[in-house]
Image (cartoon, rainbow, N blue to C red; front, top):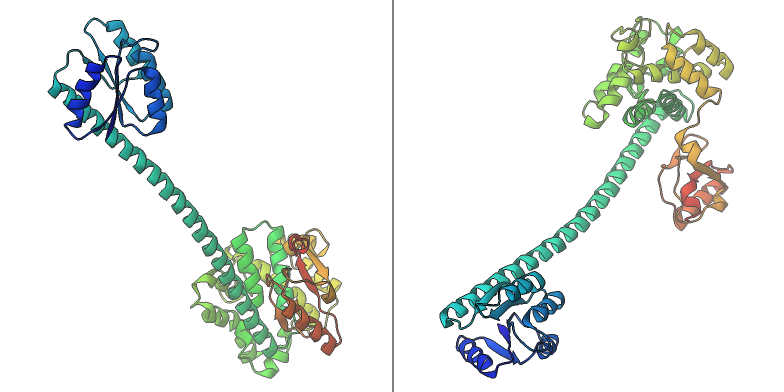
Length: 418
């Protein structure tokens, strides 16, 4: 520990130097406040002992400058019994730790010095620990931010992969069925847009969309003749089998906890708003809202494909039958939302933020906003895929071999960035 003694009397300085060096302290001396400040500027000092009465700069002024420039240095004042006002000045201006009266008792002075230095050491430890804590907290904050970002990215990737798997499964079921290529995507997209129009929560919209992709999953085991027969022409065991396909699909989805909401929607897709549906004859609003939406979306396209009745209806004819079914087969509120969607009253979320490009306009770094689907319904790439040069070339090659242009939509926000 280094101690600086400042006094204009040489004998006082000698006595202090002798006393303090005997206890192992490094002692510096100065005969004026100005010299003391010079020494402090040259090397670190742990404690200063200054006389009060000195010419030019008294102890109070000297210690005040020490406090201002080296606040971590402990300050002690030597003074006589009669210097009450001087002591007050030193306390107010220099914020001294203690004052020592002359003549001093050696043991008392050494005890004061030791306590002062111990206090300084504690304060420095406290400051060091606080600084270390702040540093560690900042490092922890940055680590948490990094981990949260990585978890978010990983979660997004897992969700994207999960949805892609569902789309592939949907495509397999569609290939087994009698529907036209892309049927399940049409149903899923219409159901999603109706759900958005009804202002359902994001999770409910997602469940409705996935239910649209998987709504025919329970028909994958149907015989070919049953798949080819319109519903209105089914009889006996074939009709009973058809009415059970939503429950079969629900059972297939039960092991996937994340699809519990979707499974409930799929189960009740054949329920009617008037309570005359299957499998549970639920009535009105007791039917899950997602199932009320899916029932309408699936019927709209099934009517056009001849899957419900024995002829293919035009879109306007299918729409008219849907509107006539309000309050009977369909929820009137869902019918109204459907009407707004097909009449152009609402755009899909992707439509509002994506841009259709030719394959020759694609550049690496662009992000697909929709699935890239071939004319025969084969999904080539899933939405959210980040394009690279190799993938762009493969899309261009596919177009050349198939002789048809692929519908390719990318995120608008990533076009400029790419």
